[in-house]
Length: 176
Image 1 (cartoon, rainbow, N blue to C red):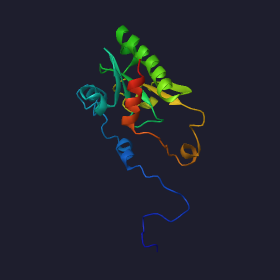
Image 2: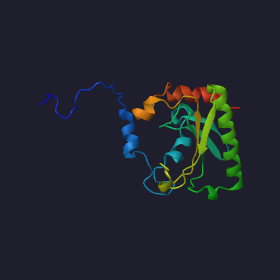
Image 3: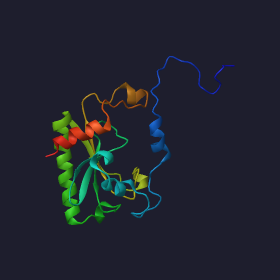
């Protein structure tokens, strides 16, 4: 028997360990219910400094924030301050500013990182894939030719070339 039983068998694969993602996998920090006082991170983030909350820009009704668990570098979310779960619950002012912040996100990402394309959208409801279904948020994910390579396809691992705080500073500077 191998002297490190349970540690795995040696093979030719390299491992990239990402233990910080365990909090996401376990759902730590997710709201415990559907109300604004149930530990919703999207309600807590605006109370933080921009740097600590990874906020790129603040508006009157919405704010833009980096995703703590990004699909790509620069993965932003546009979030209303008001705790609502449905797109159809937004009032006209929130809806308008959400659209404007989405446009500004696209411009800032092009300017700061040369993004060549984008995935923009919302997952409405837990069954639709929303990680935090109780608070509406729109994803803006920058894309580049070749950004899907062997790492995510074969190794189910995403390699991000920049720290979130550095990405936040670049995008905040590029925000018009």
